[in-house]
Structures are given as structure tokens and as C-alpha cells.
Image 1 (spheres, helix red, strand yellow):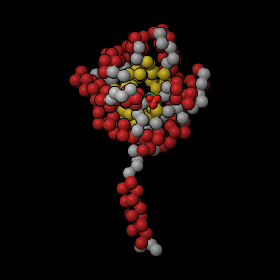
Image 2 (image 1 turned 90 degrees about the horizontal axis):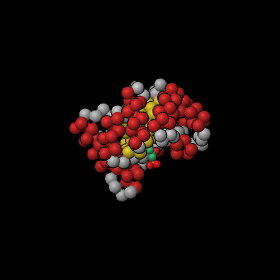
Image 3 (image 1 turned 135 degrees about the vertical axis):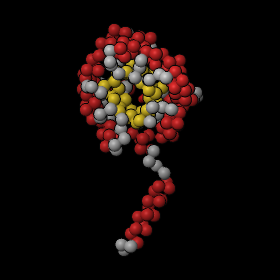
Image 4 (image 1 turned 180 degrees about the vertical axis):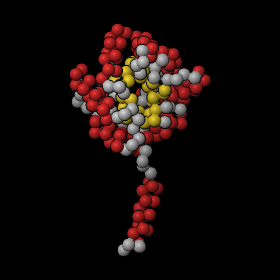
Length: 218
Ligand code: G3P
């Protein structure tokens, strides 16, 4: 499973990149606003900065919700950098636009996916990625990881090429569960990725190794 970072914060993107495990970046208008990036021009410039830090795909979300608007905005976003992927919402005009983009060589990420039926529509339209929101499904007392499992099973049976990008990942445990459920990618905040390092036995073991090594040096 690959790792994307789900943020617009350049320091966090650089930190994850420097770890050598970063495969891409996802953002959305809420994450941009959280990093203080507002206004179309500033957001575009920020996408360019992000796309220059990482080699992998960077999702840039359209704001338009009508077919023509999504196409013109998506084509413009895709022209900003070669690794930009156009993020399109799971709506009727969005699916139509994803079909257009896929026929015209533009990569897409279908976002706000909450059901297996929506995942089938996005795959049929030729989406490069779909983003099921694990944490937000859990929020309404359904099972976000079960949704990933169901989509992964359908995509395998139907041999769809669309990749499952598990989003709205809220904990390090979610990352492990998403990997087990068949997600191709998990996009997560930096803190959630860093949480994977934690194990008390690692800390205790390292402390003992170093203490034993230093016995010969004192
Ligand atoms: O990738 C989607 C993500 O940014 C949404 O996360 O925690 O707002 O549900 P959250």
C-alpha cells in the first residue's frame, strides 16, 4: 500500500517526503483554508509549490459543480504541473467529467465516495483513484473499513483499474486496517503516519541495546 499525505502544510509535506516513504499528496479546500491558503490565485500557486516537492501525484480539487465548469477548471489545474491529478466530487456532472478526463489522458481522483455503488460508477467512468472517506463513515456509526473491503472485493472481481485511495484516515490503526482491507493507497495526516512508529517494546529494546553496548565503553 502506498502513502499519500493529506495536508496543504508544506513543512509537513517536506517532513514526510524526507522520510522517503511519501508517494503523493491530497488536499481539499478545507485543508487549504486550514493552512491559511485562500483565493483562487493563491491556491493555484500553492498547488505548484506542492507539486514541485513530491514526484508522486498531487490531487487538486475543482470547485465547479457543473460539467463545463469542471472540465475547464480541471484542464487548467492539470496544466499547472505534470503530477497534478484532478479531484472531482462524486456527483452526476462529476462522473461525466471524469469520463471526459479519462478519454483525454487527464488523471482523476473521485472524492466524497461513501458507498460501493458510487465506487462502481467512478470506476466505470475511468477514474484513476476513488477516495472513500473512512473516518466520516465511522462518524455516522457505519463501518468505514468495511466499505474499503467491499469496494476492494468488487474491483478485484470486476478487474477495474481504478485505485482505492482510503481517505479521512483518523488513526494509525485505520492505516493498518485499510492495508488489510485492500486499499491501494492511504492518505493520512502526518501525525497519523508518525503514529506507526510507536511501540514501547521498540523503545525499551533500543535503550537496552545502547546501554549494553556502552558497558564496554565506560
Ligand atoms: O482526505 C479527506 C480528508 O481530508 C477528510 O478528512 O477527517 O475531515 O473526514 P476528515
